[in-house]
Amino acid sequence: MLNPPLGITQATGSDPGASTKCSITFGVLSINQFPETNPQSQYGSIEIQYFRSFDTLLHYGARKGSGFKSNRPFRNGYFGASIKLQSGYTAGVITAFYLSNNQVHPGYHDEVDIEFLGTTPGRPYTLQTNVYVRGSGDGRIIGREMKFHLWFDPTAAFHNYAILWNQNEIIFFVDDIPIRRYPRKSVGTFPLRPMWLYASIWDASSWATDDGRSKADYRYQPFVAQFTRFAVRACSPSSPPRCHAPGAGGRGGLTGSQFAAMRWAQAHYMVYNYCRDPKRDHSLTPECF
Image 1 (cartoon, rainbow, N blue to C red):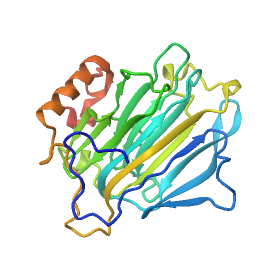
Image 2: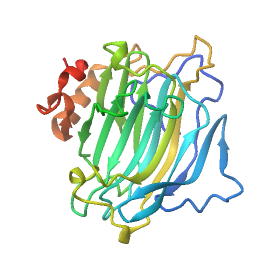
Image 3: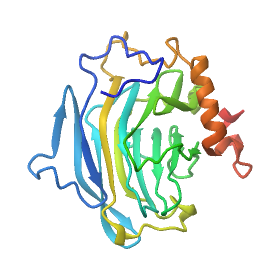
């Protein structure tokens, strides 16, 4: 089981067995290791629904992506997994681990993302974190992106990535190091509705790499991402009121050592912050002030 970050306290009063542990591999083309007759698997008390494939429009014609979705939503929690990315040419391909309620609120959804933007040989992956609130990811996109180059090679071994979402903040972790804290400053800029846990791998050639100049190249297929050591400590909408999400520092917020670690990560490895982008209309992102 993936241990929560240093200082993380587990959800209290949560559903019995509200955690999951499983190992899967999935790629853009197929997930052939799962029989056609068994599209769902259950691990512990949380069901993970596997979608065999979904069609997506790619530069080289109709190809297939794949992913999974939790069978139940959550109103808050800690969501982690160990992930290993593919080496070589992966431009245009995104591997994502995220929370969303798009299927129940189409056109007006919330989303919290960890996305790995594919790259070309000799250049690092970009890890993008993002938050969409009440439709800011629909129609006219208002992203809240922070991007990082990692301090290790994410294709050489598994590393731990996690999202902590509670009523006060969202914190993104890499190997237990907080890289970003998104605090709740107002109801209008913070996701509060229940969301499902997803992962997917798909073609985003129009924007993922070099602003869309480097496209997915299917001579290098299949593109594969490996997930294992899932850790979910979360409260579902039906959990009793006493169920609370974990807090990063025991009482919420970051401890002094966690804050110092986050400043180190941002000082040395952050390559983009939407709040510092002079081309952005920051009247649309009031949390930047």
